[in-house]
Length: 72
Image (cartoon, rainbow, N blue to C red; front, side, top):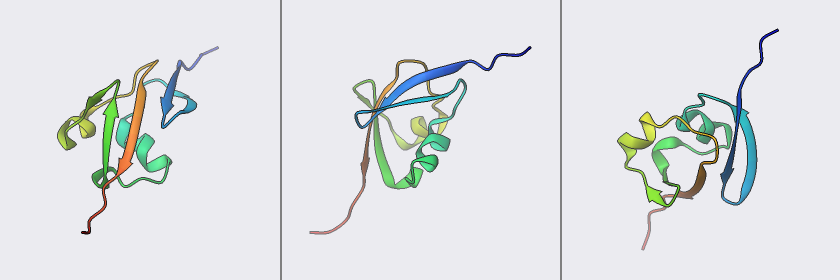
């Protein structure tokens, strides 16, 4: 019997349980965010777009996700 490891993460104050090894971009898409149109803070550190594309979520991660908007 194989057990799939899971992780607990918090995004914008909501708790989620997901499979271990989940890429951040996949999680963002699952939540309805376009990965290139958001700013993500992971554990109080803002991620650059390149860092966000390379990030694999870990147990206990805390994310703040903000949509980028244009205007004046």
